[in-house]
Image 1 (tube, rainbow, N blue to C red):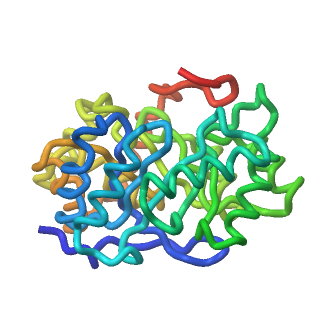
Image 2: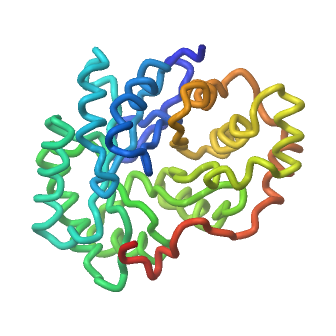
Length: 279
């Protein structure tokens, strides 16, 4: 079994560290979430990523409390939904999330989508800065922001997000956005890192999996880690929960990394951040 100490942490701007490999609960039904998160924490995950929109924050909170771990040993991320943009609304939204999680603070709070059609993400970001300064959030970031959105919040507030969590996998590698993050000092966090399984049958990934005697999913997670991404794979299968964490006993060669790089097709499985408002 992979030991928790093997999971590296990455420094975030403004202080604090985030485990580079965490556990996501997107599309995990609330009734299953407590058991799944409990299993992930027992396996050694120490970063849990949820959101108000997932409707499973309360179950995440129960699992963390039941784990026996100190609150400071678990990095909790949640997100402000699109209907809660503005200046006052994010404060109420965070209060609701903290209540459901039954915690005094979250380690990372993200604007879930920029929703440029509403043009409230800068105002929302100003509220995030205040909430961080009040101690209710340790670090603030964004999700699904494009370069123009990032530059605008930085220029208008003087505050740079610690993290941008975006769709990123071998079929959508976002090299331009990753370069922008590096230039601005923003960590790249990948959601849907396995493209909901769509990348696992690619020959380059299957070849690397065979050569290293690991699963295709382990290859893809390892690829993310070697790129420097924070990665939050999701699974409800006990064996895969453990397997997805067991990625520190091998490394991909330069040739294997390049073979996966060639799989980039600019193909999303999720919505376009420039136009998305709600499902």
